[in-house]
Length: 109
Image 1: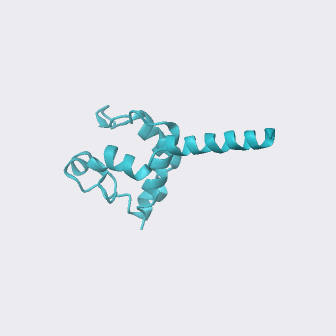
Image 2: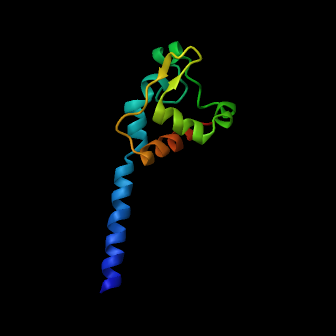
């Protein structure tokens, strides 16, 4: 009986973490697509203005390391003149941010 209880609690906790991570595509569309585009090409009005990279480009993807992407999403991004290019993500857990990076990787062609 104890094993069944432990197994049930473990499964419920794992399910809760999955829900907490949220839907990466939905989060991307809400928080990122305005600049980076729904297709990841960065060809939106704001993306062009700020110089958003084309995440469909394999070379761009290869040059961007996961830890740098995680930091940029979590902490925001500034240019060399300290101008804000990207605000920090708000209301996203670390799991949400990791899921965003994983989703962004799907744009590579």
